[in-house]
Amino acid sequence: MVSFQFNGEVREVPEKTDLTRMIELFTLPPKRVAIEVNGEVVRRAQWSFVFVNPQDKIEVVHFVGGG
Amino acid sequence: MGDSFQLADTTFSSRLIIGTGKYRSYDEMKAAHTASGAEMVTVAVNRVPLDGSSESFLDHLDPKMKILPNTAGCYDADHALRTARLAREALDTEWIKLEVIGDPVTLLPDNEQTLEAARVLVKEGFIVLPYFSDDLIMAKKLLDAGCPAVMPLAAPIGSGMGVQNPSNLRIMREQLPDATIIVDAGVGVPSDAAIAMELGADAILMNTAIAESRDPAQMATAMNLAVQAGRLAYLSGRMPKRLYASASSPIEGAIK
Image 1 (spheres, chains in turn blue, purple):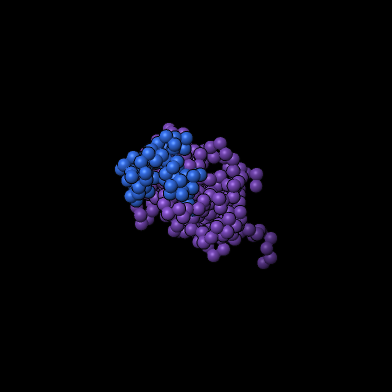
Image 2 (spheres, one colour; image 1 turned 120 degrees about the vertical axis):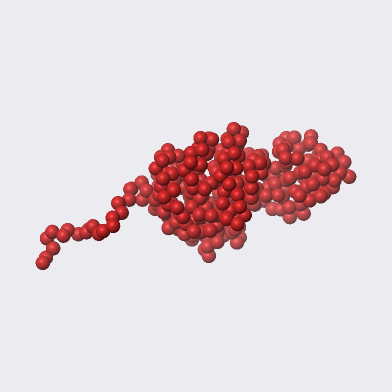
């Protein structure tokens, strides 16, 4: 298993999990979200080519009410 | 009203921009949005909950509304840049309300970090609408950086205090006649919005004043009317203020 920081919490995924699969594993909404890996945005078209590595800091964001 | 308002490549007929936070229910929010006549709403970028409980907030917005993501909650330029880039990727929009806060108690903006972030974001192709303290020099710097509008506060976020420094707004309007000035934050009641517009603001951005009222839809209607009233008054030109009275009826010819 690969242990990483996911939205500030420690989480694990199987080895060779790409970002598309990661979203599925955590049943996160696939649309109108964005992913940042170690401070850099990963474009949606690249999700399937970027794998979760140990110690990665990954943020997935969506939109909420705000002013 | 045929007095439209241009921002970057978009023309708005409403000069009221409103937020989506603090509403008691989605139904109340939707009713308020409709009543406000606004064509653009702000949203915040936030971590997706990992327990699968997230729901799509955006589905609750009128699809006709232009969505303006913000960088709320950012305390330095770097965080604001990351948030803006995530928002662009998620929403496929270049528009960003840039907000870099300097202090958690007052939520006053950090103008220095805001300017730093604005310069980078403009270079990256963003349409940057910066929230900042009502300071003429900072407004000039933000405009020089390439922001299509500046968004000075009227009072601290969510305070409802109204325009605390009308002289600053007036000076900004007079010294920057061609700039688009959107008053963002601090409006509490419609008269506050009207005052800001009478001083020459091009538009108003507000959230709490509507969302925290007892009847948000009705308050949104009131704000819509106040923004229009203030705009018309500004265009009409106010009468001069005088220390002493000036009779409205003729003095000559009154019976003695």
